[in-house]
Length: 119
Image (cartoon, rainbow, N blue to C red):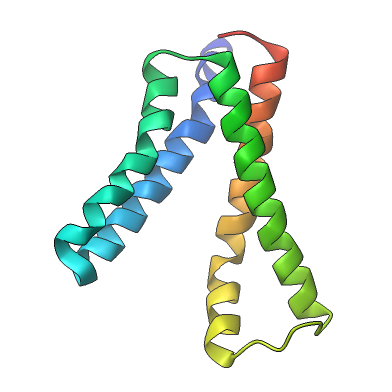
């Protein structure tokens, strides 16, 4: 149990790195070499794994909480039919709903880690 709690602080970073790797792979298949700038998004998360920084951790958490909250508001506006969306956008929203919730939970986990303990 001690080893699980020891390594649990790295789960959000590994999650976001996996999402970035998937995103890169998906775009690389269709766009080729123009997908390589996507890998730059992984640098802050790799840095947190190599040399943790409490301020960077907190700022990454806040950034992704804000982005995820915005996406959750988009889902709520779709449920309440505030904005008319096309069928393709609605299909995309259904498929990416778990990703948005996962991003929100992982961002909250990062904020919790930065507030509770200094690495």
